Length: 199
Picture (tube, rainbow, N blue to C red):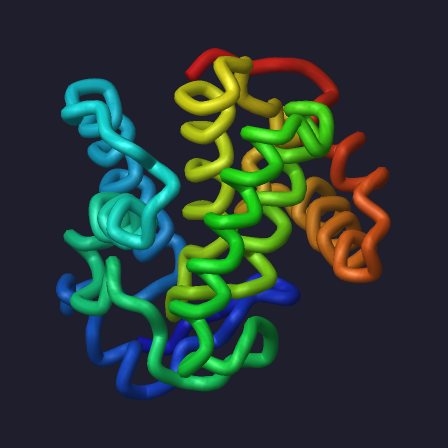
């Protein structure tokens, strides 16, 4: 299958593409539809799941598998290849462990306001880029869950747009993430909290 990647998207390598479970998919639009159906099922799972600690490597992997496991064989497994962004794949577990420890510390010590903790968590998870694909969608849902279950806050609006389809929203989101790479979270904060949405 030839995939037409959005601008700034992370291309899959050959071994990852052959992990596609639904062999009759031939276009990006079809892939998007099947992935969105899978994500919708993950949202239902979140409503009924046994409540447990979400700030664990196990939950991060489980959520990704629930979101993409009916489409990709590698769903829920950390990537084993280099990408145009993200940390060295061999360092992913170390960076995830460090991020989760930092977030627990920030929450326990009230290091930052709640919204800033969530934005920093989101940015760092995207920056690590732990999976072959779906990292932005996974990190946004992880952040929503974190906001609701840990911080007891309403999830972000994410500019009230479908970031993966709307090119204007996607461009703003990518630019905000790149600015956060420099330590300036102001643009990302503005992007994520224009208003609130229901979970």
